[in-house]
Length: 260
Length: 297
Image (cartoon, rainbow over all chains, first blue to last red; front, side, top):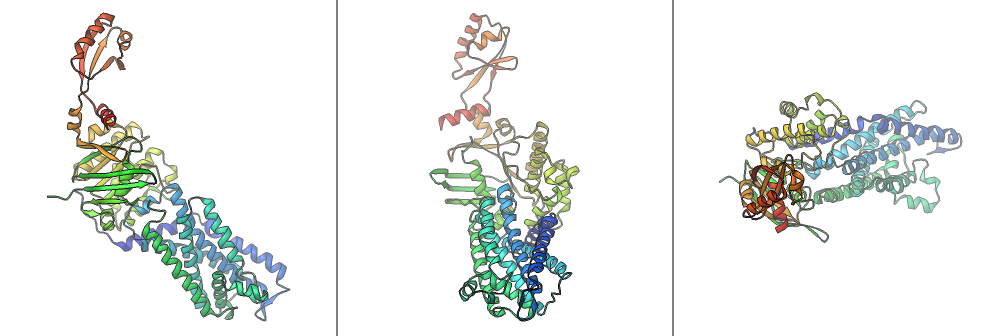
């Protein structure tokens, strides 16, 4: 009989996290560089068209206002893309079996996928912010707030990505999550505008969009002012994260669409 | 008394109207080389998936080395290595990365010596740093075997590991698996190559429609068959084939449901002028036993 081996559950977590990071890093042009370029194109076009016409929060130029919105939008979209695409690819190619056979708990599974997705989101966000700083001054007035919303928002979208990746059986089903939920909620969340510029009805509607609170709270980290209280934004973001994390852990524990 | 390597009791699994496992009871002892045979759709892969925790059974119990696969899944999974039937791989990584990850998932750190040994034993070492995408089908199959062994499980399940594999790899793979079995690993094999099962397995279960319809040692299964065959080498094979024989190389083979028909058959061969030159009685093989069991069940 072969020698018994010493095992540690933490190594399982660390390995799955390492694998998930390496998975996106090996195709970094597609997963990090391309989203940075996309965000910069938004910045260049919108700032060219609108910078001279619009100021926000009194004297903040539109281009500077746009930067945190684009940074956070990129972070959220890439956090979602990372966990969801990893899972759907593994399910469709069948290699999901390699993480289902070992004794990885649902908490380890969840934490590794979420952390890797947050890291990708942060890398893209840092790339967008640093390159944007070449064109416009976008200093962080409250870096702790910015970091808190970046991490919580990334975790929320990464969690949503896990749910989408588990639920979807085909790439087009996953694309519908991206195109009909993530993208519209992001675009209508105040990335490109302050909700104070909206009619009262749409201002109220925006308060039902959790993306608004994530982006508004993140923007507070840049300007020290925002459309909603950062504490309210933090509470909404945190509550949504707790709710989705609980749902995801239940799905994983039950093996929903993973274990027949 | 040692706990069984695998214990299955009253296991059922239904997919809609299909009863995939209809109350399976099975015990496989530690150190056995066990064969699980059956036609497509018999329930072999469903049973293996339930053992591996990839599907949840509707009722019944499953234990691996005494650990319940549901209540003590962590311990049960540590004891089991599974080579899946499908040729699945992760296209992002090299062979060594794949094995290091698999080792880490099982909570094992610093496993490089064992990984190197597996790579050598499976002749994968030259491809250790090659991306999985670049490997041939046979090489990918070897990596699947390596992944199943990376945490040194005492119980190894191979679900049709030689499907679509060339002869050379098949032979080297069996030598390796036999060595593992000699080292104390319990091996459970499903295959459609019945001669492999006959050669390798000490005990065999045959499944049909979600039930075990035969379970015995390979020797007992072979001796249970009443069907022998008469093999003749003749000058005029066409004449012998016209009597219902089947060509088998230089020989023509006749099934013998009743040994008393040998004399009648030889008389008819003489009458047709086949020119019998050599005679042999063929013992039943597993394929013949399998067909008989499936017809009876």
